[in-house]
Length: 291
Image (tube, rainbow, N blue to C red; front, side, top):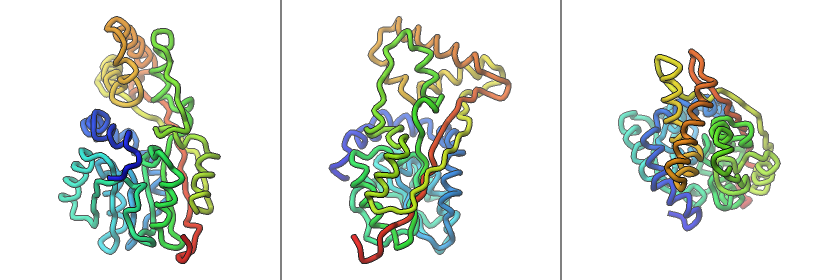
C-alpha cells in the first residue's frame, strides 16, 4: 500500500469502512443517480480497458464491466479491505471481465497506456496530493484516453450534509470544512478541479452541474420515514463524529432536533434533500512519447 494518504487508508479500514460496508446497498441506491450521469459522460465502449478509482464494494465496476463486455476489462481499485472483499464476492458471482485490487490509486500501479477510460463515483476527492495522484493516473491512459468522475459541489448546496447541521446549530458548535483538504468536498471548487487536472496533463476539462434528490427514510407512515431517516443521518455525513464527544444530554437534544427537521419535510413519497454534484470529464492531453 502506498505511503501516501495514510489517514484515509486508516479511516477506510476502520470505522468509516465498516459503516460503509454495513450500509453499502443503501448508499449505492442513494448515490446511483449521480453515478449514472458520470457513467453517461464516460460512455464506456465494448472492448475498452477501464480503471474504476475508489470503487468501493464494486457496484460501478460491475456496470462498467457489463458495458465493455467480454472483449474489455475493468480493474477496480480501493484502499478499503472490507469494501474490496465485498467487491470480489460480487465479481465471483458475475462472471464479468473484472478484477479488484486493494491498493492506493495514486501510486504508480499500472504501466503507461494501460487504459482507455478512468472512472470514479465519489472516489477521487481523498488524495493528500491530488495533483501528483492525477499525474500518475493520467500516465496510465492511452493517447486520447479519457476520464469521467462525479464529485460533490460545495456543502451549502448539499442538504444531505447541511440540513442536520443547521438543525443543531444552537446546540453544538458547527464544524469547519476545509475544501482544499481530502474529503467529500475537496473538489467542490470548479477552478481548483480544472487547475489540478490541467497541471496533471489533462485537456478539454469540463464540469457540468447535476442535482438530484437524495432520499432518506423508508416506512409506511411519515413518522416511520422520519425515524428511519434519523438513523440514516448517523450513517453518513458528519453527525456521528460531531456528537461522539458530547454529553448524553447534548446528544439527546441534537438527536431530537434533527428528527424534528426531518419530520418537517417528510412527504408520502419520502424525505428528499438536495444533492449537488459536478460531472467532470477530460482527455489525456499528452502523446504516448511524453511523460
